Image: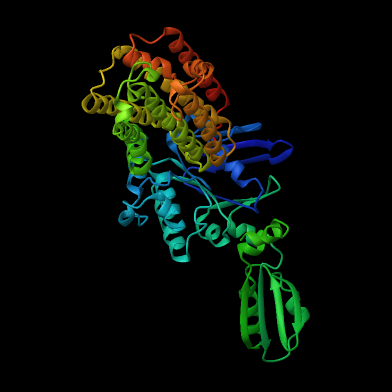
Length: 297
Length: 241
């Protein structure tokens, strides 16, 4: 059953179209990624899902209702929203927990316990971010909307946060995750929607998006003996073979490596200095978004 | 809601300089002025009263104007600018309640400050307790409402927290002038005195309720009208983000 349903969503700010006929559904328990360059409409879309903005066109339903009617069921972590400078971490947690019927304390899991007395204005960027996540999850929401969850975190804190998200999902929470980090999307998301200029240009599992890219895999090696290149090219998994000096570069589908090695074994040729380049979601993203916005990552 | 008031009260007290200033400064100023013998001797140019007697209502004007115009608009505009209100609007709690909590705490500070001034005036200088306590309560509540409402209009219309602070300071200075804080009222031209009776927080009504017989209902009515109009404008124009 779809827990989030977005149909033909449209939103403009003055003359600028931010989102144009965006539709998607998120199933219960899914982690749904929203990718795309800055200004592609990601934040506007998730803000409509979070009930912060009213769409100009189309509809958004969370748990079958209007988002503004089910606020207690939606936990939101926003970009650029702060707390009063002098509010302490512990006060923020107890204030927000007073808004919900059955609050859950994530502060220990997010490493906030030793900072409960610290004032918000003095927290590091990473701690602010972790507090923001704790506040988003405090009402034990059915749906969590997380906008640029790990931006500003160091790599270790980012990995720690990922395992928190996996725990949250294991607790049955559906997650809508806006991210700039392909590694994050690949690791966490069941499906991702790639936005560009206010539209969804691709929506699939991360691995399916990767396999769409031409030359999804590339194998390089130096053959021990001369090879019949046309026979190699004839393999169904192979799309292209080029030789660079004594090195051969073979591109093809994801099962390329297996196909090439069995071919070499049949010919009794050894592949020296064998290297495999796997196409990542990064490459798929750059191709799908036309390379624009690559600097945002 | 109680939790919001509690947290807002803690934040108010944590800002020691501002909260102390708002609550204690009028009484402190009264003590300093009262230390000058000429100012605690009745004289014909003070209307047969002592200088400090005539200045009491202006001290209350200071409290109301300081809290209503120096604190309320900046805090509210900062909450909006920092996205605090936006953050709250994603929760089941309405961000309007945060503003209500803010007003409750600030109004409590006003009451505290006025009570402290009354006590200091009574104990140290033998000033009468307010002649018309109910009238004084009305004058403080309506005058406070009018001033707070002006502060909220500024918070609603100012584009940034900095602008809100600037605009509010200008209005603050103006109200302090008409309220006889800079120059005591007996030194002001009659026209300015009359204007001061009708500008929030309504110095004349405060004075009459404390040391006269009763506040003029027209003065109170004007304060009520200002609160209503300014409050409506603020509510209509307020942006949450």
